[in-house]
Image (cartoon, rainbow, N blue to C red):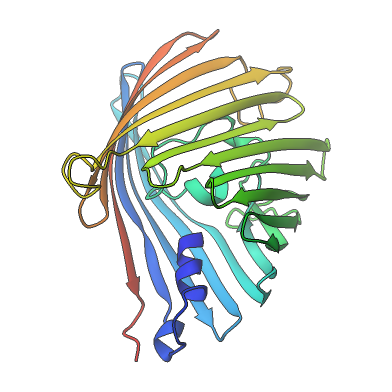
Length: 334
């Protein structure tokens, strides 16, 4: 999402009618998951629209269309179909330091929900176990945001986002009444970002959620480190992930450079078993080992093996998938 916004608004080129052409992006994927010997299949499409209107307004939306096929005991397989708008929002760019957002938006708690949830971006096909903390059960809010760069200097920059969401019952734009935000600081020389998040559920049993994240991408390397910690009233947990691509054998576009080994470690801890918050009701420890291959033409093969340990029993989880990323203008610009 942010890459599309950047292409539309921040590229230092002269304005023309071509820049006002809406962009259609997104990804197609086919995933398989084998958990404790049971295999499920998930073909999915996630189209994304970014439509600039004039110099200051951008309308953006992402949808999810999926057909889940899963085993049903001894009766073969069942399937479910789901099609939904993940979000639909309008961004009004007031200044380089302030953007006002209205509509249905991804809740900006920690980083995974906004940055890594699209299927063509994440290294693993499933989200970390702790991701649901702070997302108020729906991962989307219905209301408004203010966000932007509070301070921008050569050695560092400070970004902020604050939001309020109303309660909404409809299935299409379901949301809980909540408020919160995120504050992060980025050091360009070190390519290091550190941030903290806060969210409060304002309906029913009101709860506070706290989060923090650290991203590091050392300069002149293809190594990336990402991590998050989240805490709610009933549970807490963390995850960290590292991936690397070598440039030693002809660069990233060589057949060796396209290989991307991955590792992710995650743990969740129960503070009580009253409410799950989307997390397991027992403590869980899980290690994910992955090997992705970045084919030409924005196609990726994702493979991973996970070993999960919990009081409910240990399990081996195997996942494979293929994802194709597309990006095209809605029509030819002038």
